[in-house]
Amino acid sequence: MAMASDYWKVVGDAFCNVLVGFTEPENEFLCSNTNTFLMEFEAVIRRVTSDEADRVLDDDVIPREIVNTTSIELDDSDSSYMKAALSETLQQLQVPVEERSFMVENVMLKASEAARNLSPYAGGKRLRMRVNIDIYVIDDDDDVDGGENEFVCTTNKFLMQFEAVTRRVSSDQVITKRTSIELDDSNDPAYMDEALSEALLQLLVLRQERSSLVNKVLMLKASEVAQKRSPYAGGKRLRMRVNIDMFVIDDHYEKLERTIIQVLSIVCSVCMEESRVSSGATKMPCAHLYMRVAL
Image (cartoon, rainbow, N blue to C red; front, side, top):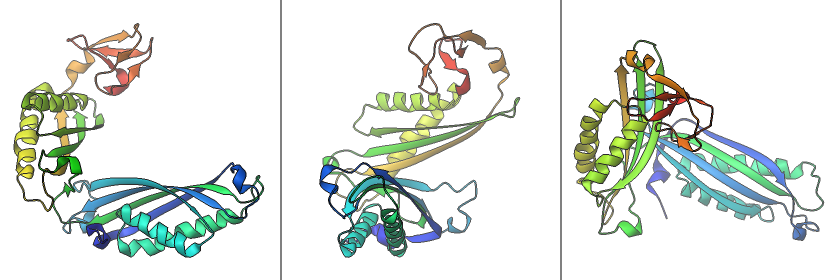
């Protein structure tokens, strides 16, 4: 069945890298000359609009990314079937038609070369292959995903990806933080407000800016996009990208108390990683502890 992604136009050169390694064969392969390939795929599809296609490397162009993964197991007993299976897999990964033939031949070549290499094992080889794909494509459609079954006639789901760049004026330091959350509009508004505020806290967004940003994300954009017409029945799955860039005067940061963590299982409120005993931390006026590398 044809997919909209089949006809996306590719921008620039598509990247397809294949890594191969041996795995120990199972007993049934010891007396067989058939080689088996355990293939793991990851495809990063970076979507831009027609207006952005000529300047994809500019700082103000932020592609809408899709990361698709899958795995298949094939053997080299039938090359025609192997090619067909690879082409179908690439379609599932949303690789456009114009690039599939080249990628199938690339994977087939690497598989053939690896199968001819000497192996420490007798009989047919078992080869693990990792296929990494990275493509820029032109997609001018609204950023609405296909609805899943459980969303039919129910709620809208928001997959929110955040990136915040904090530029400290006094130190010329630039900090980039990323996080993502998943919400739907059946959640209590207070819960959504709290979840968004917590995400902004992790991104080092100042308290006085959080309320207005939450209102922009929750009340304006999410509501606005949810009301748009969609080709799918029922609730929509909406992918939202939130980019924040701010300059801050951080003289107060130098005045914060430095301390040493003395208790097990202290979790940094910014990066959410567990801090080690005896590691350095910064203590805020509210008594929260932050790992120094997070600030």
